[in-house]
Amino acid sequence: MSLKEETLLTNFKGQKIFVWGDFIIDEFVYTSSKRISREAPVLITEYISSELFPGGAGNVIMNLKSLNAVPIPIGFIGKEEDGKNLISILKKHDIQTSGLIEIDDFKTPKKSRILSGGDNTKKQQVLRIDTKNHKKPSQENYEQLFNNIKKLLPERGCLIISDYLNETVNPEIFKKVLLEFPNTISVIDSRHNLLSFKDSTIITPNEPEMRELFPNNDFITEQDYFNAGTELLNKMNIEGIVLKRGHKGMIVFSKTHPPKKINIFGSSSIVDVTGAGDSVISVLCLSIQSGLSVYESAKLANIAGGIVVMHEGTYPINFDELSNALK
Image (tube, rainbow, N blue to C red; front, side, top):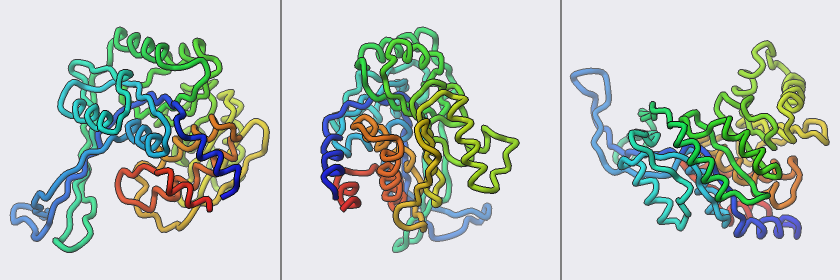
């Protein structure tokens, strides 16, 4: 590891990063399957155990924490058991929760993954059950959220937005944040709503999201991606785009350089992509706040993503893994 990289990773320690987004409970239910039901052609499984992890914006928080940063969560959760479980997990890891607002009748989103297999075999996912929130927060809730952001966010900081379209992230509030804190670095991961975040710093779409933004582009060649990314960069008035391409790596767009490709780190035989984007955006934000360019930050984030996809389930990158990968 070079002196520059070693210093960079050391700089991660103690950095405050603010994460505004949809806080989700990731539940993994482990079962044993031995026979097929006589009632229907389905597996009969026997419950073994279950685990809960922070997902969505919560997984970004856990990634930042395991990289020795100080993550500050901002968002909505419900007052039900899932919301209480989420708060409990965060507090167990010494994570400040004052920026989270508990709302009556708000359902903390949950993704329940049912895994099954024989007694001595690897458990594989056979079903996922999503529990979604269908209650839109009130104007008063959003005003409280904005006040929390004003109270917590420094004049110059890094704000990650993790938007899974569960009503926590409001683009109008984001515009007010930019007016109130014009020096804030904002790194955006938004499902199908990226165009609502003009004037942000960096966006991190994946290939399907890029195709959705340009329905008339066939995206046959890499030049098609280069053209679309460059157009999007100018259209949104942002400093950079990190296009996530799965096993094909990344393409990085910035105002100061032509598009650059980054090949995947490690093996293309991916184990599980769950949460990889959360690791990418966490390292990206920390690196930019440490003074790296968009391209340099994306290279480091690409390494983090390559490590995480080789692990099963919701797995946050940790400092030692990233440090060892750079040696």
